[in-house]
Length: 196
Image 1: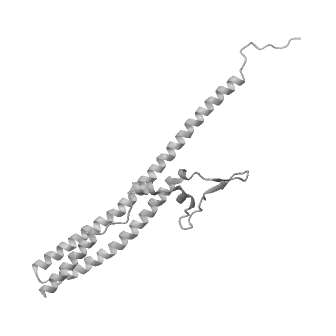
Image 2: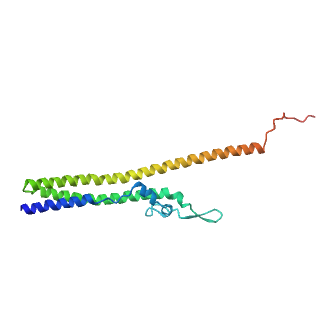
């Protein structure tokens, strides 16, 4: 019986080591950004939730023009961050289920352990499983944080682009007023009214 108990503690320990060596599926923020392609943003419809933009558009005059794909990379990065979060969440949910099953199994073994050594080994394995459970939950937090950071970067870029357009419009307006005043000079001569 002591040999069987020792084997079960060893197999649980081995399962814990395998679990700890399992890496998550998430991508880093840098990977999400560098892998993003404008084509993805133009063609993605989020499983039919949205209408895809398409890689070309038609002008009022009937000309079909290609879209500037590089302008859409930031949107593709956001889409990738969403997909990354979903992948990480699904992976973590599956791994949590496995870990909870292993914790339950090890707890049952702990209740029937017959030696102090086996009890200590199994208690250590349960502690390890609980630590692994907490660690994989952080993977979801990390994926969510990356999505939020990317969203903040995109918001900052929208504001930066709007500020640049405002600055350009002000310069264009100033230039237009200068051109207007040079073209249509207001006379500073006194007004002369016809007399009878």
